[in-house]
Image: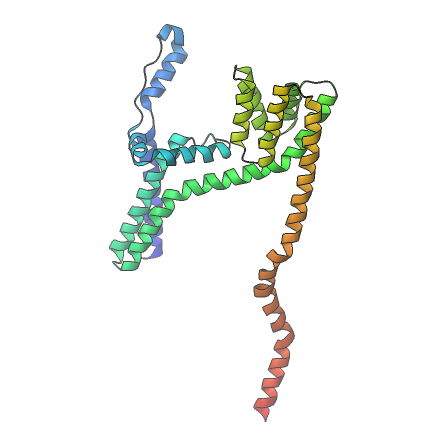
Length: 294
């Protein structure tokens, strides 16, 4: 079969597979219960019964080990728990993608039964199964880098607010309201945890767990110790802000020192050959012409 035929098959199969997966994972009973509660109120409804999970989600949970599910949940926490990809949807999506890869490999093998296509089908199955993991992990890494870059400026804002007379939580709220990055969202979530009655120490420790940046963990530990022993929060913020600025400058210097090494390989394999061709090419042509004339 031609590549155009395979492209047409993929265009037909992939939307149908996604549509079937959407129908299999939708929780119709849960939607009906939510609509009933919104219409009549939770008190009048007398509570809601526990709904059975969707069929695809139940099968996917049985196929997914508990430790692997916990790892996925940790990666989602580092990625900020995007609304478009909750843990249940991620667990249900992985077997569907693997099944789609297996079907594509089977169709390729039926069109041209050679052993190479068997390996290609296995590769597509494994790759599509772990593709959501790679995307979530990459999103988490980028988000943690953004938090790391945003942390020194946020500390400076909190220090200025505390020295101006605000409390620590008020300064944190002000910094989170003025910021627009992932660190501002994490600070706002920490404040919301405290407002709903969660102990401050647990809320701060949850902040350090959601952020894998070592500076955040050091800051949280310093705040917990200051709250425990009654140390002035302004001095703690001043020391942490100074340390964060020093680390940011050191990281910039480290990246600048790594730059010549990273440029070396593109320079050797991409720039130097072209430069040699441009400089030595005419001389080589003249030499060949001279010897061929002799």
